[in-house]
Image (cartoon, rainbow, N blue to C red; front, side, top):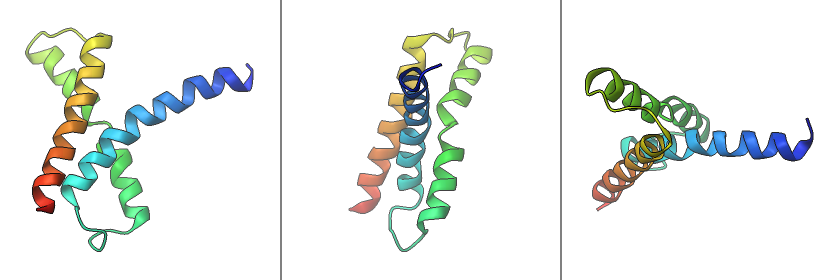
Amino acid sequence: MDIVTVTLTVVPMILLIAVPGFMLSLALFPSREEIDVMERAGVTLVLGLMPQFLLYFTDKNLYIPINSITSYGAVLLVSLTGLGIWFYRKR
């Protein structure tokens, strides 16, 4: 494998985990004084798996199939929810 293939595979996977996790960590800890950078990175990685858990839940309980549309929708839903909660708590 060349470096381009690895980059085009790894970077989107990191972004699909890091973006929703960071948005949810902002919703939980809106102030910089509440949590330091390393703790926020750990919380980001753990909460970044939330869209996958939601997809699994909807597949098993609501019989909504997991495909690319529902995957991107779950990531978008979790990210926008975290961002909305952060805006609300910042005010």
